[in-house]
Length: 209
Image (cartoon, rainbow, N blue to C red; front, side, top):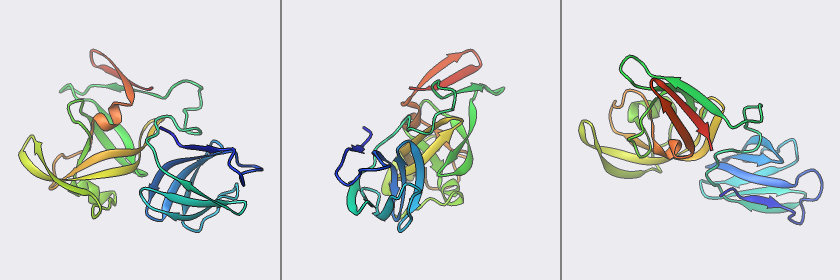
């Protein structure tokens, strides 16, 4: 559910709506009247919204002298991140010679190549990949998972932002598997469940709901 704060006393003027897209320690991605803003603590947006503090569960901003609390939510179609055509974001993929679908994307702004895996219940990646893209695993949830290679240690994390083409999601759950497998990140259900998937032979279309 998207958290909209509109018509709040103290928001008179330019800003009518604030939407918390993704929050981390000392950093927040906030949609302000349809404009996506990435703020660090102390930053002031062009609209005059200042980020006072931020954690993974709560951000406090200030506007017109009023302090406002924002909580994050999973967002599948945030304002200001459409593909510009007025149509739902969509990506067309073609299977390789082994029948697998790959897609270029980004995790927290870092380029990756995903393997589409409809059998994975979450986005999954190796700890090697996690280190390469700078994920902080210290606050993740430790656990054990069954993989193709057997049981392995896993850390559950929340990714601030995941995108493929014009489709962007925020606060997406993922699992980081200890070691160097899988060799490329798996695009699993924590992302795919927000999309409509259409497959015809070697062609797959992913459409944002």
